[in-house]
Image 1 (cartoon, helix red, strand yellow):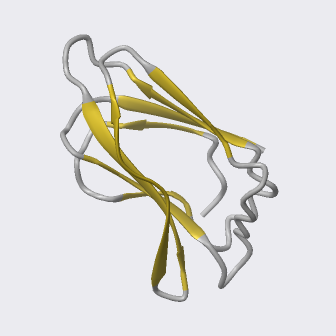
Image 2 (cartoon, rainbow, N blue to C red; image 1 turned 90 degrees about the vertical axis):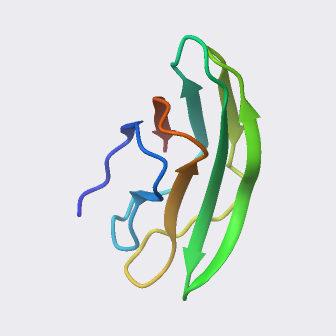
Length: 102
């Protein structure tokens, strides 16, 4: 799977943003924009490594029309083969745009 920097998440099932082996490089920041007009959404964003979960954010509420900018430059997210995967889950099927900056 090739690295994709832009995602539009519209489901409340867990989604893989970056798979281990995508070789995305150093993730400097992650932009999470709730593009729904009226509904807030809780966002979970985590790293999976060897079956263990490491949360970057957990149950963070992003109001409708608001963007959350995460500086991840101090977090080592290693997306080489057999290393880290980056996943997201929304509390509701509300549209959230995700932009990953390397």
